[in-house]
Image (tube, rainbow, N blue to C red; front, side, top):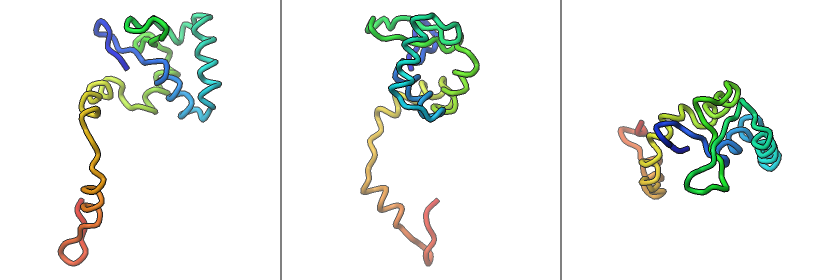
Length: 114
């Protein structure tokens, strides 16, 4: 997801992921569908060329059809919240040893941490 000119856009790969996951379709078929939709300029999936890479497209969230908005929300949750948390997600590194320790930790006769 990207913010361009204060407008939220969904990247092509994210759209493929959302549709294939929610509708349980093969990603290759969804990719073909989206490319065909782009060539026919489907009004429910308006797009622009990605300024950073002109070979990619970005789908405009505000102008997207309700069906596709619902699919994206089911997959990623609120897109504005998702994009706001993205920089933090990139900074986090999962510590598997610490996770294992806290999952196995018991106190007061077998109670676990919340």
